[in-house]
Length: 388
Image 1: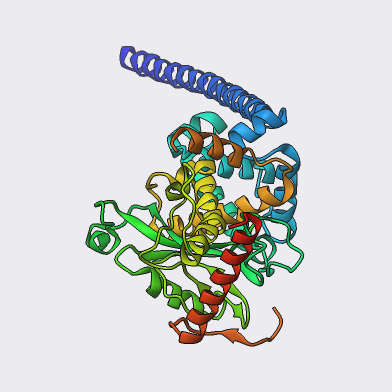
Image 2: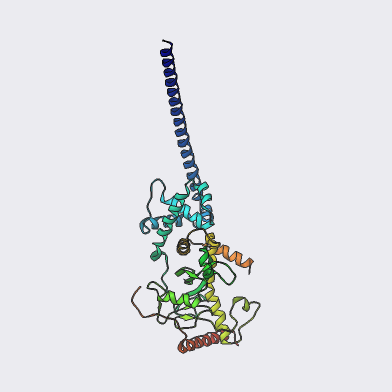
């Protein structure tokens, strides 16, 4: 009888303990779920508040996203209609664009974006690539078509260069590459960078961009590659781009005279040209300076281009092109480009239809003679205006 009582008591105790622990587990589970819901709600409120603060006014929007609210809306519409970027789950297209622009404008690391948008690192990376590819699909809309300088051009920098399509030059943008590839991407200063070929029009809008070449490649080699590509640079016969002395003076590409004063600082303090070659170089430098300004504004606008990022090299190359495309949108849609204003301030402180096209670049006597005739004509007109 005592043994049976002991068994009953033990069974009762074990049953009571089981019920007690199950009750405590249910209570803990409900509290945990309530805490998760509260945390999700809190994160949603903080995220919404941060995004609203970015788009609250044009001043903040330009400071944080590099464009005003109207241009932001246009970019979102283009991505939705022509970039085929859709809302995925609970994250809106506007939030995706905010994340992307915030990263490239400030070169913000993922862990910082996580704390500002309250999203996981995987989510941020996924939507960064989604917007990146979406903007690249807009290249046919955002890249400008080349238009030659007309006979009635009133811009003093360009009116002497009839039929000129714009200016062409290269620049270095720092990148991160695998250790085995570093020698090919190393510049003369020892930095690891990619050689980016850019072509812009007189309004500082990109016509063509070719990133990805190693810094060990010469400018002429990069240009030959750009011309030979099916979707590369097309120069109609009779038209040309301004290039610096690092390129060959050949048909379609007008270079300055070598071993002759050229750079803008050499013409300051009343240093007047003494012959047609110097005068041509001075006018050439004034006009071609537009591509250097374009690259300067681009790097000032997008901090991700001023230092290497930790994305794969293929993503870094895509990012360079994407920054150029959004730069064009800003130039086209915003009345005042504050990026250019800031660049000027810092500079002051720091002192297709089928047609005949040019398919290669090589020096030619005819093109050199044409440059000489143009230079003499320009110098003669200048001397006439100054009564020399």
